[in-house]
Image (cartoon, rainbow, N blue to C red; front, side, top):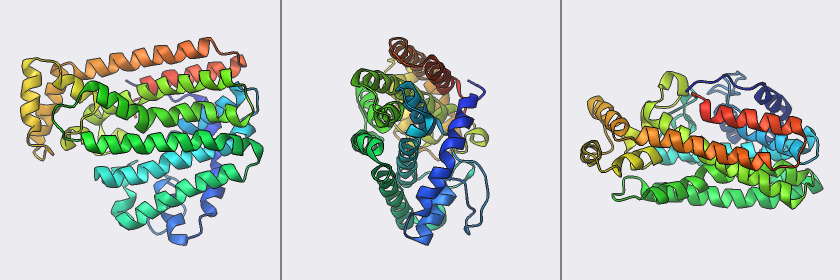
Length: 338
């Protein structure tokens, strides 16, 4: 799975980045600003400016495109895009602590560098900043605020379910998909519709964009699940085979465990000792997940989610240019290798 990032991501990043920096500058604590800047790839450990690159800007770009699809301008979607990206990064700071991940984007994670307590507070500050951006941005932002808050509630619910399911025997695939709908798809659905809400689009347009974003979010998470098993740390910037090591109940792992084959039974025995420490055990588990069909199921399901997402765009009464860029971005999400 490899794909060239579409140019619309550069446009989204250029539009949103200055407003993101301004939002972080309003955080009322120098250390928390530094942690946020470090996490976002703007600062080194000591707070000196650098540019190691942050995320791909998929969520803020979706928010900008949704404003255009809703009949507004890209500028109408910028405050919503900033809010969504701040929420996403608040969740990453906290998730890294809960998952004990020590590397993100090829650098030590925020909690490793600054301690758990300060990383939690920095995440809280970013969440608060997200709400403040919308409150301060006038009627459009205030219309968009309920959309953001509902997504945050679902995101928190999904992360809670993820912790409950981790390592628990007998996890059903329907439970994992419900968890992933909250943990990932809810924020993608918000990102894909919040700009249209801010721009004053009608309910049918907003609903179609949200449905598109939900399916895209499920596809996004399924690809992430695959990369959590097969991803190259030098490419992903995360710990290699992190989900396998932790014995997480991600969708491809549960699909493999449910396969009813010899490979599935052997995989269940390997995971009785999770978290896995020995490299041989990690390699064996990853091999068994593939043999049991977990990776193939997840890849096929991601394709099905993408197809459903595109159907929602087909029925959308929106400017063709915005729809074309949404389609391009959606295809990249499923074909990406990062």
